[in-house]
Image 1 (cartoon, one colour):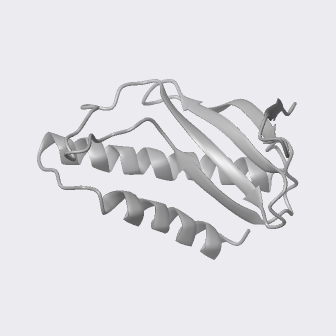
Image 2 (cartoon, rainbow, N blue to C red):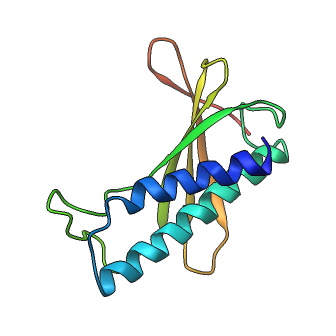
Image 3 (cartoon, rainbow, N blue to C red):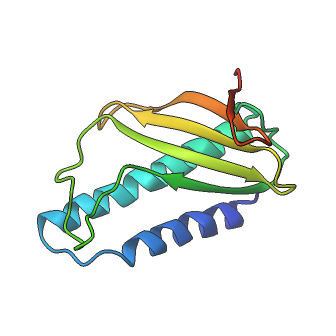
Length: 135
């Protein structure tokens, strides 16, 4: 995946998340920090893929991914997590261009200064069940 496409995907994720931001003060600091964590997490996943270290996916494979975390805002757009508390865990869904199979990864950052770690990898089977993928 080219650097341009990688940057566009990260920017799109940040733009989509920022569209929900109707906050001020401490909330904005938490939101800004969350965006930086999202960017770090995206870079970590891309690095694993580019090195051929993302289970189930070759470094030459193309597709798209989505990153999810626990909710940050309630229905009234009030912050649920202020400040961000570690460990932080994201779920990454990666769908190859062919669309099958979809992969799911859990990545965690244990503390502000810790490196991201891959906690698990699963392949979504045709019946919707998840099968663990070994590293």
